[in-house]
Amino acid sequence: MSPESQEFLATFVSESYYYWASVFMILIHVGFLAYEGGASRAKNVLATMVKNLLTLSVVGLTFFFFGWWVYNAFPMFPLTGGIVGPWTDPASEGIVGEILGLVQASYPWSPAMGPNVADNLTGVFWFAFALFSMTTASILSGAVIERIKVGAYAILAVVLGSFTWVVAAAWGWHPYGWFLTNFGYHDFGCSAVLHGVSGFFALGVLINLGPRIGKFDADGKPKTIMPHNLPLTMVGLMLIFVGFYAFLAACVIFVPGQTGEITIYGTPMTLASIGVNTTLALCSGIVGSYISSKADPFFTISGGLAGIISVGAGLDLYSPAMVILIAFIGAYTMPFVGSAVEKAGIDDAVGAFAVHGYCGLLGAMTVGIMASGYPQGDGIPLTGFVGQLVGTFVCTIILGFIPGYGVSFVLKKLGMLRVSPEEEIAGLDIADFGLEGYPEYPILPEKNGHTPEPVVAVSKASPQM
Amino acid sequence: MPSPFSTLEEFNAAIDGPTEGAIYTFAHTPAINAIALLVSVGLFIWFIVATYSTPHELPSVDKSLNRLSSFIVMGLLSLVAADQLQHTHQTRRSAQPATPQTALAQSKRAAPLALLGMAGIGLPLRRTKSQRRKRSYRHFGLPRR
Image 1: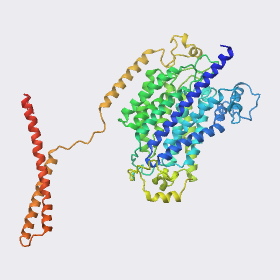
Image 2: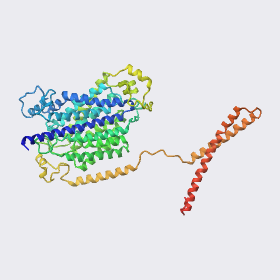
Image 3: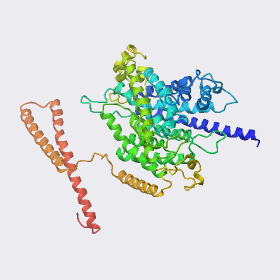
Image 4: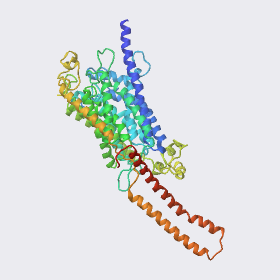
């Protein structure tokens, strides 16, 4: 084999690896579609699922327009440098010069983004990151089902999926991000960078959005709104698990010229350990939430995800036995957090805050204790509690809760956040599409909050925004 | 410290170091991982035990004597009431000629009696079953319960 062929083979292995990992990541979205569709009531199933489809579109397009540039341009801003862009001196050297090359390849008009035989990798990394972004926005979509306006959700999904989480990734999941260079932050599986941001963003939105009609009684006590199809929800979560293996595999860095697999922080790792640790976290998480929720099917299967997220930040470093313990603790405590949120008067329809926000925070902070002292580069602090605390705080509060609360507050004041009570009672399928998800099965209409009479009036009086 | 390495050079050259390539937490102090493994096994056993403590009990059939007694009393009351009604109507009918309507009314008045009859059938059946069970115990030489 000629040296040129060997070089191309290395490129092709890397290109293929990220391509297929990204394709399998789409299963996360199949899973979210089934999970959230099943978790909604029958009168909202179509609206819920269409919202998931729209997530792919709005985040995919906006991530192409500006999200990919944000990831490459923001790593040093504001602590170690400015935002890199067309205004940056093309003759810059050092780190700025290296980043500038990546930034120039990330503009939507960049030749690297189109078919280009001189660059096989920029596009495939964009593909992987676009799927990460869609996943982040999908976490929000489950929390707000059955009462949010489609337009409001689209705006929030763009802010979360193509901006705030991308800034978090630039700062905390980038070889030049200031979380790493200044504080030694380590978050291999994006516990706080992705899950923490989205879970806390969802919490901020939920405060302004308010609960679904009928979720709380006159005394403020929460009432159970049952998923219309719990088996579909469980199948959805199983698909999310499959997609998560691909997601975590795509967090491994292997590009031509390397002599081993590394993390985004440049530390050595193996893909095999990701397989072992992810599987153990999944198993232990399910067991933990099964016990604490007293065999509640919804919490039990969510426990698998809670377990993976709880160990995600240190998945490349933990011993298998530690993974079992940490995942168990995260998943065991998750249902209590979900109940506490509900008791606080917040209607989180799928427990997004408990699973992603709480477990993301826990996962990132646990690295500061259970994986402290790891070196990540010359002049970079060792992994530790303070570094994890700074990164986790910025991710969850500065880039998660505050933007979520702020944007939804503005939308609320403009009357653009929530559907009218009449639409909500009639069901979003009728109000948005004039269709029912199950037209041949008009079963239990009273329990579904659906009365045929006001439907016509509502769909005429208040059409889709 | 959970990390077995103090410098990046050690970390990158782990394959030649004292941990022989192991880069995971506490690789330099295996006892901690062994303890964690034991605790993990304990958690698993807890899970197995927890699966046997079904939290949601099925609604059980009430076999208390109170229910049975109430049923018998209600049946007897309906019997007495039916008898009273029948007696009253017979007194009135003796003064009037018989018509098809009164014949229909008589058949309706018999309904409470039928109800009591059904209840009466149920009680001997229950006793018969228990007697049969006792007989079978005797047959096999088992002690009475």
